[in-house]
Image (cartoon, helix red, strand yellow):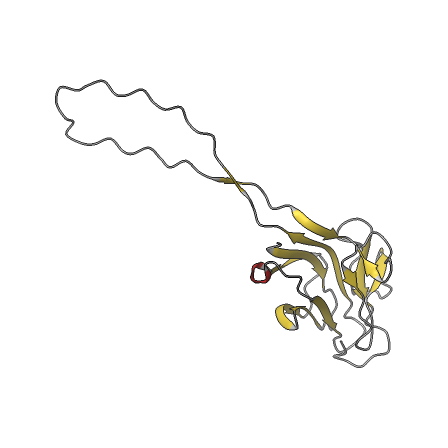
Amino acid sequence: ENSAMSFKYNMYGSSMGSLSVEVNGAEVWSKSGDQGTAWLDGSVDLSGYKDSYPTIKFVATKGQSWSSDVAIDDIDFVKPAVPTPAPTAPTPAPPAPMPAPPATMPAPPAPTPVHTSPPMPAASCGFEQKAQNGQFCGLWSLSMAGDFAWSRTSGPTPSSTTGPSGAAEGSYYLFIEASETVASGAV
């Protein structure tokens, strides 16, 4: 029962295309164009898919030239935060009888806040391990649909002035090498 998927993405390059996330075939998140050199945070709400295992795809589309490498890393499926009860205050002693009622009533006590535990990842994938039986982290399969494929690497991408200089977390990440011979807009 995951309520969100968070991830890091990098879309650095002068002719950047786009990156989108699809859940059960419907696009639920997308970015396009150069987003700068830093890894950025993305998040997808999965609360509408309770008690199911939706199919999630990261889809990269190449820009107009080789300067459009797209990368993803550090994917976490996060469970909903669980409320934890706040400590209870001791019951105050009953007030002493007053000879006359007060002209104004005292303010009611402030409500006790409910603390929530931070969400904990239910599953996580940083691509640190090579694919096993065609899957990363037991969660992700590389699709061979489209004209090019995601590759696992560490350090910078092979093309200069595009892609990240290293992983967002750990040493490895997945990326699309846009300088491969493919048509613009290929997925």
